[in-house]
Image 1 (spheres, rainbow, N blue to C red):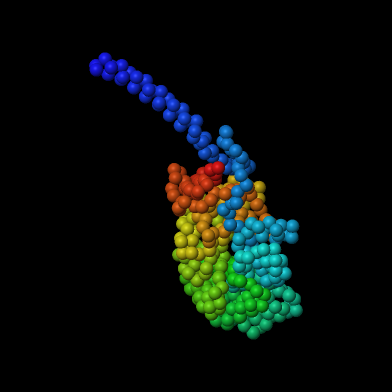
Image 2 (cartoon, rainbow, N blue to C red; image 1 turned 135 degrees about the horizontal axis):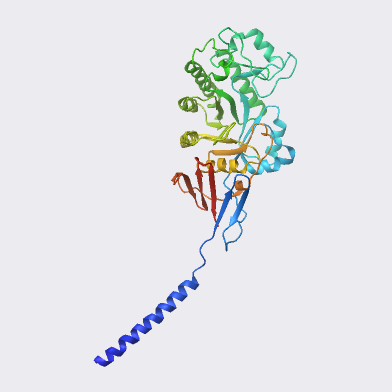
Length: 398
């Protein structure tokens, strides 16, 4: 028995080694290769999509970018692309023909009508047709208001009207007469021309523009008093027409010196445009602190179910700035966030970038701190933004 046992043990060991070899060989050769990764990298001057060694090219993606279009119709040669790419629209009165064409081509999203909040235009004479971007849009309106309702105008400390740079005038948001006139004309435009919602431009959050060259305002000795009048205006038009008619109010809140004022205005509107998102109007990138502050404000507004139109300002050829601002948008994107990279001189042009079509899939939670920046994971990849160094990565898993 002992001799047989000594022989059996070596045989069992040999058999075990052979089995291990067979299993290991089968395992290594049966499994598919590791899932390749495609990394989209952008330098300051150029964009490239690089497949790692042994991977296949990037497939045609569906993309996660939700683009906004404003304030005038696109060039006729780009209409089809705008219809395909944009999901949020703001257009202006007197462009209703083009609005009809956009809808005929398949635009199903509600379209907001652009109106200046507290500015009316002087066309030069009482018979001339004024601009359609403000409530005094009929010939003779400015003359009649000027003669019969001088108290509607915003006045400086000396009792003078405050003009803008394009022959228009600031109006008093606290004037009951002006509020009633504004709402009457806004209702008329909405119902006569078939607009879905309203977009208010230049909703001032301080007196900065009005007192810069005029010193003081007659009815508003400080910003707090002016802000209270603006809130009263917003509450008035919301309660007396837009809310009962189930119409949305969007606004471009400008001259913001304090975040709390921005938040206070936010309660009266359904969405806000940030017209220098993740970028600075003149300097390109924001500081890290400014970027952090803005991202937090937008994130909080989105959490309140507000629509956000996030507009980054830059040069068309600056792919690095475009990628940074777009990646910043991706850190926050949800069903209520829309994006556009452009500049104020090019709002009629459609700028498209390769990263708009990256199919990152569905966000897997919120953004989180990652090394020296922020990261957000998606089903098909991830995004990293480093606000201090102004770098961003959009990485796709194929």
